[in-house]
Length: 317
Image 1 (spheres, rainbow, N blue to C red):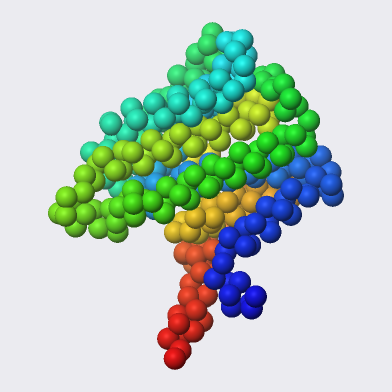
Image 2: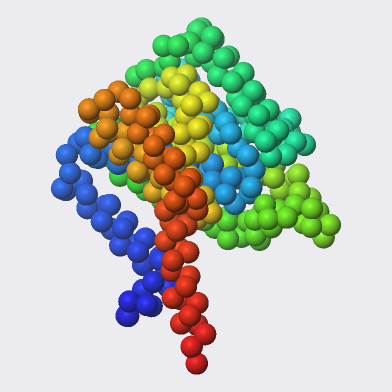
């Protein structure tokens, strides 16, 4: 297989990367396995945001609310219900999807910036309820001691998050490539023309928002699996801004860009956080450089550079 033919087969890269990730527990310490598991979870969250942001063109400014709702639903089911853990893993995306549906029905008639501003307001309301409801959510103390039997060691947690995140990414990729995904992207590019040819724009956007909320809720359940706790900061708007930056950094018009952005941001926070607590200043500098030099993101830039040689090759006789 030649180098040019390999470039046309990204699934080969993905398969090789997955095999490498399966072998990493044999080479890395517990801390780095924990960090990788956290990157997988955050990457899934960022990819779910990009489903409506990059592929749907919707200004989803408070996506973390679904993440936090899923985390709390999982933690409460695990600690209070006495049911097997798989019920908690089902409850997290379902509850997050219901919240996404309710918020979507309220916000969907607005567009662009107004949609995002109203969503921030509603998300902040949900955060305030969880922050103040001490008898149910634990208030600002959160919920702790959320451990799943059989997934208690760092290695087991790593493999569990790797496999489940891989399955979720595969499902989301199929959704993006499905007829629904194609229509969703057409609405992003030109909602007026899509409506003119008979597409129900609001219905497609609402379904897309619920799908993104479902995967964000499942990411919240995986976060609790990794950390063993849920706390109100998971719903705060600053986390939504952070995952938005991950999408922009990795490439918000690419599928795996948010995963790359999550890996860079979390690694940057870990390394810079060793030397200073003001790591967000470094994040701000990175964002400025991104806007100035890589407005399409890292993977977007790479894809743009590759389009030239591939297009030239296709025109050769």
